Image (cartoon, rainbow, N blue to C red):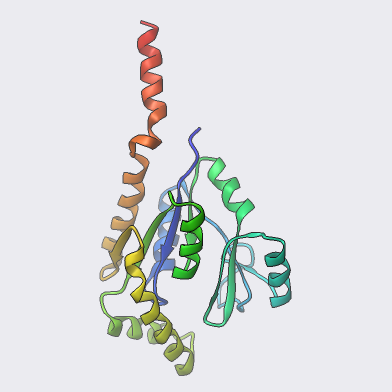
Length: 205
């Protein structure tokens, strides 16, 4: 069995990254999401162990000292980190694994695992991003303003990804991202087992 492929999906807050990831996982059984640890409070509808592992700052610091995380970052004054053991275990089952991540974490992962595929989700405009954040109704004006400042920083790093998908139409953006997964599975270096199988059969004839 081939190991799965690791993917990083990053985006400014409000660009639609989480919605795209959820649809990918729902529609493609080979795709799994690495559940990160975070010190932020759960949002409405989020579940511990499904969306994130919600832990305290002290617990996060302890895990950091134990070198638990493949990557970690401070985002909007909350800490996020992804377990190395959990990620490698899923990859070893043959699943394609997604890390929802910011540019800081993406740099950390790419430095360790350069074959990782990094996809950035971009909004059609900064104005559209601000409108989406306001429409969610989850954050105060001050929080939205802080997220907009962070979003501009994230936009500056979009070009560090291998692929950029503009989410101006959700269905089209979803198809574009999924097409990347499909294309990456056909890479010659990931299909060497097929060549070996054909050659072995040829030897037997």
